[in-house]
Length: 170
Ligand SMILES: N[C@@H](CCC(=O)N[C@@H](CS)C(=O)NCC(=O)O)C(=O)O
Image (cartoon, rainbow, N blue to C red):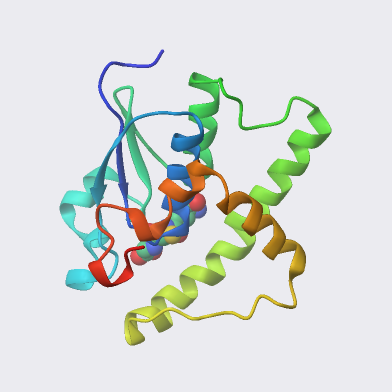
């Protein structure tokens, strides 16, 4: 199923939706190229006619792979899982799979829209990021710490992407 051509990821270094696709690609050991789409510069490069031809929803990420261009981070990750099943991202047990999907849907359908609201109304105005005190959320902090110990998460991190500005590089 996998084609010889390297996949091309359209994304933005600090877009969390793009980051999760980068993580899936890294976990599966899939080599890919990146086409940065700066969501802030020039009023948002995702709004250009050129990008509209890539993803008519005018959002990142989009992944060109196997001769098709896919959007929606979870749909992309599921496509990778179905076409490149090893190593598996989803657990084998149906209940565990359901739990994984519950958390994923919660993030993409519940949290993401709020994040986008802050992108539109605040980030574009202030060009900054907000530091959230995570001490009241020890479970999330622990999960984050465990995941960040994995190489796939480190190489996919926003501070290490081709379009990461020098001042934000780690
Ligand atoms: N449900 C979509 C959400 C995509 C999304 O919200 N992308 C954001 C970046 S994380 C974006 O492109 N925002 C720019 C805009 O909406 O103008 C997914 O999971 O891929």
